[in-house]
Image (cartoon, rainbow, N blue to C red; front, side, top):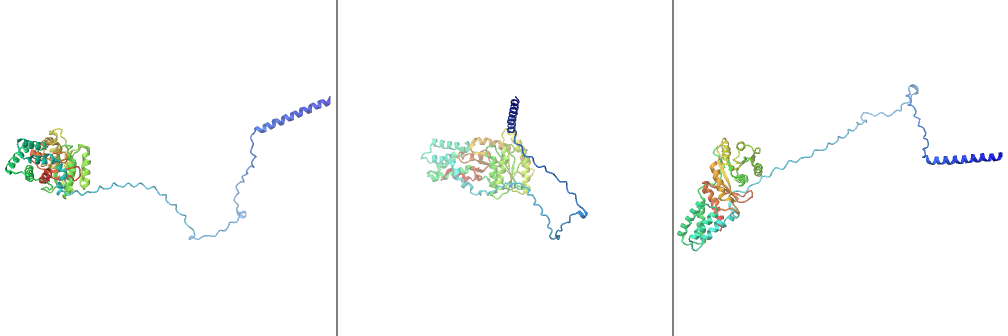
Length: 404
């Protein structure tokens, strides 16, 4: 019995030991590995300075002279970033305009485009074997189509009738010479066609340019500046057309190309004030000529008269106004004469500039406008080039119309 009890006790102890081992092994598997304990660091207290006999002997170091001691090097200054260099815009290159002498002859090919209606048409009709009434009516119609005008046409037909009757034989050379002579006579050879560039007093000559917007007035003013510079004159430009935003810029560009100063004011400013300042500047610079570009509005004759009249009065405070040039578009034909009449009533026109006379223009307008206003055509425009404005020469003009 005792043996049995002892066996049971031993069995229970064995079971308990085995279960303890199993539990302990499971616990060991679940726990993460732990780092081995580190050795604690013991910080020693700072050593106390030793004095007297306990002090450590001072190590002797070799002494250096003052010459051997080098100064510390100065730190290099930090370079500041350089500001970008803004280059000034290059000054516009000054152009040398083409000489005006013989310019019309050089532009003859462009002018000759108008000859089919006037020159060659008349020569063809006059060369017919029999000049009956129907032929003379065709001649008259040809002149009217070419914008010669009613009164000048009647005058020319009457003179041609008489001359042809007296001439008898009509060779091509005779007819060409006859027609040329009559056309030159109709254009007039006794007009003073020179643009006045000298004033009678100690002030610059003042030229006012007038005309309807769209006729090339501002461009013509710029080209006229080139004509004057080509003839050796110094010029100051006055941008008194303040009602068109681009007019002053356009005129200034023309002036810069030939080295002429442009006086301008704010958009919508007083034109008379700008004209006055331009003349004042011309006097200060000792310029030969002051060119004033005016506004070309034609809303009412009264408004135009007031505006141009004021400009004229203000400018004349400095001295006389030497020229008033009217710019007309040759392609408008007889309609341009209506504009010419209005301006002639407002100011005293002294000369006419006919633009766009090449191509579609009809050469007879030169005769008509002179007869209408009683003032000479002084300049004609024959293209869009900068030097396509030429002094008007009746003989060269007729030669180009009739052809060889």
